[in-house]
Length: 141
Image (spheres, rainbow, N blue to C red):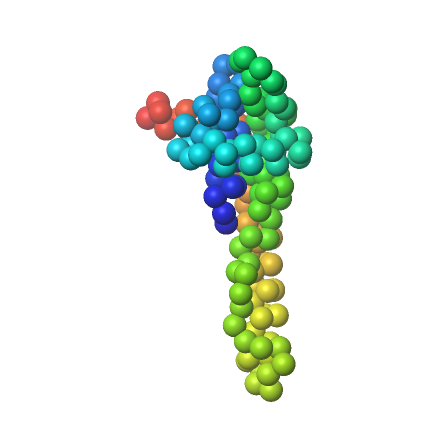
């Protein structure tokens, strides 16, 4: 899991929370506690995938283009980081004569693929609207 997913979810929940539904990359970055350049990179991907629209000029910024209760964390995960659970390196050597050494990479790939599928299924059950509701409930508690 990488930070782009976290930035994306945080940003979308923030946009859903704002009365006018609009925020600049600087405002989002301040709320997320990261650099506006990182936010713009993530928001660009979200825009390309139809989750946000942009408005130029004074008072411009990003706005949700879908209903918060219709966007799942799985949608965001697939758009930004699907498959990111798998490590970039795996032990073993497929050319090895050893049963373990020659097959570990393939077996681990299957394990991470299964974990990724389970994560997506879990994320499918959570929407941006539900995330906002959780935060609202926490603030009232």
